[in-house]
Image 1 (cartoon, rainbow, N blue to C red):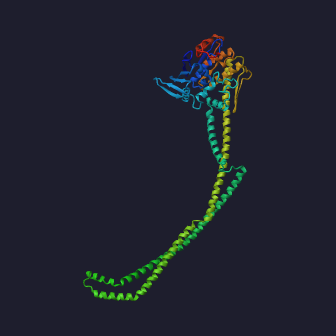
Image 2: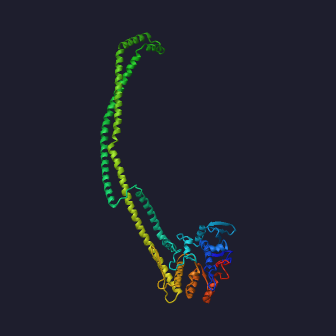
Image 3: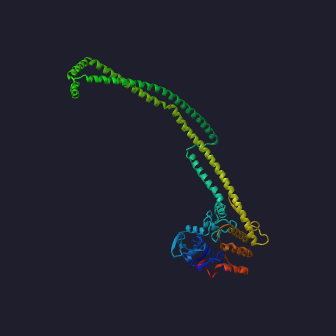
Length: 536
């Protein structure tokens, strides 16, 4: 909680606060323009508010740039901060050891959220407290529109704020996240149709496309079956033909081998029948000393003679063998080429395959059209269902909040007024809210109803702080305000209010206010020590 606030430009340089009601006391004659609202706005500045620089610019113009030192205590640990109007987006953290570190304003606000133990699903710290810091100039104190932080605030933001501070938002948020995912998916699919990647079919067109797809699938099955039969037939023909060719090749290879063997013998005969071979007889005598070389030479001469006589016939036979071998090799080569050709042709029923590919592409396109059209319809339907579920859950949660607030406000109004006073009621709908004063819409009673609403929220939620300026109390009857004042004290949370004309209240209230006053102002005791309201 906020323990103290120091500012050298204030009439009282250090303000000390307690953990419950804190009163800024004005003069008994109700003098205005003495700085009450400006001091409350300075407290708002200590809580990370940004309105002081905008709404109290006259203070800065006449007093100079303002610097405050604020001390907070959380879990019995003290934290001190400096902030000034020159650089309001910076907050200086003053460490216990005397060192200083700079925090951004957002970091400081997050620190306050953690310090006050606001739940994770709560609004930010400022979003939580700002509607209930009702200070002159903020324009958030219209008793007929009490949930507005500013006059034109969208209801969706107000509704979300209520769901969060009453801790119903998680119930809705899970559905909202699912809805967001589906909507993103919907945008992606819709983009495909918008960009012309797929035609956007109507219901009748979709039916016709499905029929076309069914017919196409039937054609594809027929072609696949035909190709299968063709493949089996071709393979059977090819296998039989190949066996025949391979058999012929084997026979030819056997003949070739035989012819080549004959050729080899003839070539050897031609080679053997020469005088060059006779020289080898001399070498035989080395191994067989008793051999008759002359006898061998005579025999060899006989053979040479025979060879010369038959040479023409042998050469003729050799030429026939060469031709026969060449013919056999050519026949074998042709069989090899025919085997390759039949194997190659058997795997390509070209016409059927081309048709199959063409129809398959067409089928894929139609399937995509049907699939994405049905997916789009399903996503659209899911979005509608989720939206309906969200609307239903939001209404259910708002009704719970509405009942809590109406019951609590009735109790507070009964404690402020006697003789069965008219109870205010709030009606929270999906798109707007109504705050009704019912049978009693007088100014004083209307502001009392607004205070009853704030008290109900203060009681039912983790809202940590209230600030109520004098404008809320001015028209409230004395007896009702005395009851309201006593109610502030009952809360175990800090509140800051401005009060004047103390003399009109009874002694008990005067004593209570005096005990809770942190600063007293009057025409002779101005908040910033001087006045600049009069014309020069």
